[in-house]
Image 1 (tube, rainbow over the protein chains, first blue to last red):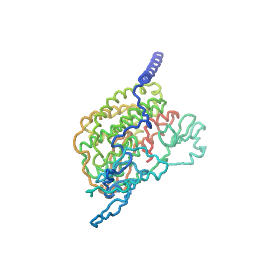
Image 2 (tube, chains in turn red, cyan):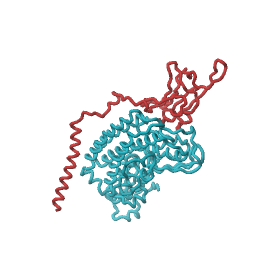
Image 3 (cartoon, rainbow over the protein chains, first blue to last red):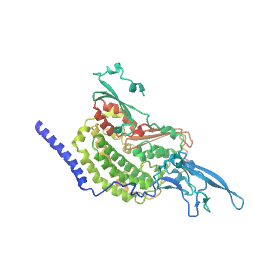
Image 4 (cartoon, helix red, strand yellow):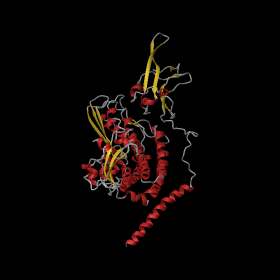
Length: 156
Length: 383
């Protein structure tokens, strides 16, 4: 009885190892499906919802939709966004609130998407850029509104 | 609890006399040790190769997440929990959202409920896949790690497309989910189900039946039912010791009470049982995803909530089953926009507390297998 147990144990053990080796052999001979990505040479197209960094959309007339309401600044959990506002003087002499600089600290951002959700005018969105490495940390502090840009007509 | 002197000094003679032989050695495993899956610091007392005592020392990556949450609003604090148990970050966010909804008595739309459960189960699958690869790698098999990551990539792609991120999704918001499902979600998930059904059999073929793997795992790190209960173990660790503790069954949330699935229970209590529980749980999760994927109701994905959430004065607790066990969120509110106090009950912390009991008397090589079978995620333990 002892001997037969011993032999069957050895037999089963060998069988289990061969079973695993069969799978290994299968992949050795069926190497058509390549799952490695040749990253720097071939860049993957990321889905449109991927959160890379916050950008402000500007149209061809260099106009954005940011009213300077600071909803994103309040929604941000890390203090990533700082908005400095100014008052534009309209042709009829009235003052209108507008953004002066939209400061975005990429180094503090966790890509949680809460600012995008909070924005009432869809002025900011997430870009699909993920290669953020720079040589100096100060380069990660960005001004999102382009120089000379204005707010679009009709957005309050 | 932290006794630095014990690490630096040699063992005092009175402690050494408690054991049979005096040839004892204290070894620090970690904080940066490849087999601890992170930055866990263990102080191990060894007698030869036999483990006499294991003492985890926490604090290396403490970020005071609970204290941080006290200065964040009820929408903002959810993202922080992704950084605790990063492998089931989605389920952590879900637990927090459930607690806030409980306080505000928000009714979540049916569609959001189903989306949440779908995402939870996909996260659980991804987490168990990574665990399977890492577990096999711990006991010496390198190839399964790559197999596991190959399939996990498919889930990551699904997550990336719908949620916008691969690991720290922050997809759950109080009242539902942040954005609706991507149009490709259903087809991609169905493709994944079809793919993974054949792959999980391959996992079994490659590792489960392997005699070397079985000899490393069987009768190692035995945890009895009584000990599992008294150490507060939850999740697969406790279910392998025949403790019924699945929150999805015992305290159903969202749509779990309408689903057909089994609570996986094994009776062995050793590393191999914990392995089997997780393998069978993967099949259960797969069946849950399969049941829901064609039955996503139409409608709103997010309930209408106020811009500023204010929980009424009181205490709120919600529990949820993550890939590692029970995750609890306890909020004390004073009626302000930020919580007065938040306590997270993380599954990894309680499961780790049983490590000393499980590892005593085994060889140091078994410790790696025991830790692997506990499925430790260190930021979850040390938050």
